[in-house]
Length: 562
Image (tube, rainbow, N blue to C red):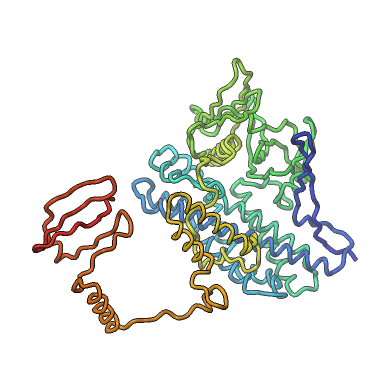
């Protein structure tokens, strides 16, 4: 009997460094093949696919949380920069999509132990109508959002809001955030198809997962074809991954190449024509992370590649404002691809209109211009935002984010969000350091502190306190469990102790601050401040001496200058 089994297929990427060959193995997760296997392998494969689905939903929820907190909410308060109507066009129902994702996550993590993932199809079936309706509404307005984004990037105040402070390198910029829901819907459909293939037909969840996949395929087809995004008009199974595209590629007039290389991702697909003089040749273009591919689509959805792919690293200038041609844009290519020089010096985001993308070329370089035409101005805006962002990303390596920006968001995410739960051990586990190593580190740092001029006794006291040896009894160092309860004084005991200390010192209950350091804080009540009159101020290098006259007494007080 044939079973679907998940196998880990490593792809080897070898490179040479310092005259030695190092092989880096990249594990390709969830490569599903139809092989002879046992039911145990099928169950384990389905479980791993559900874990990957859960991880994908968590990362998507974190992305939406950051985008809402970084872009949606701050811009909603700046009506002088963007009107409420434009704000609704740009972000649409992103908050509704986040709420739907969190609802699905909450239902998935409620299943623990062996029951985990047993009803994933029924969970999505319960939320299917709301999810499909929400994504259909969002994706139908995606082209208008890109048009508005192109228009708003001409506003300097808008650009300052979305670029200051800089977006962390591992967080989405505004363009990525706007296009993330469509990308996630495609990834979600792909993972649900994998789970369906790994679910036995006799399983209780099989009817539900089958119906969910069928409805999601129909919805994805309608959304993409109606908008002209990601799918050709020809009927057939949806193209969801690089493997789906590569299996349908046929090279006719150009040299064949491997499409699914490590690090390459499919970003966008749509109709685009190449203008050469008076001739206009229509193509179905595919934008990847590093190249732009032009193909012809046959009736059975075979992609015939007749043109050499256009490497985005060779683009030296991009012009998107062509006079009297609202749907055209041009890419100027240099003969030598860019190396370390950034195409957008001083630019912190890839949203600038007509971004010159100028690179300092060598003397007399050979250039050629590729003129492209989109079907509508709205689709041209989509191509503009995505191509500009990708060119800057390739030439800066950071997606337009400065190198000084942190890797992750400095603001902690919501603690009670289900997207931050790590109960299923999906996050990287860090082994704690041994106690002996910590003690050695503490002693080393405290010795350095003692040698730097501080009191050695204080440094020793600090080391004992950090290691838990301060006040150690016969049973060993004090711990939170063995530490005795502190003595609690009543107000009467406190007054009695104060009187005892006052009588023993002979100051008649008048306490003076101890000069522990060169600077000491002084708090004066309103009554003392009103009855005291400062008569003399003298400044030294480390402190101010204030002579306060109250009655016939005169005493110097050390006050911190800062």
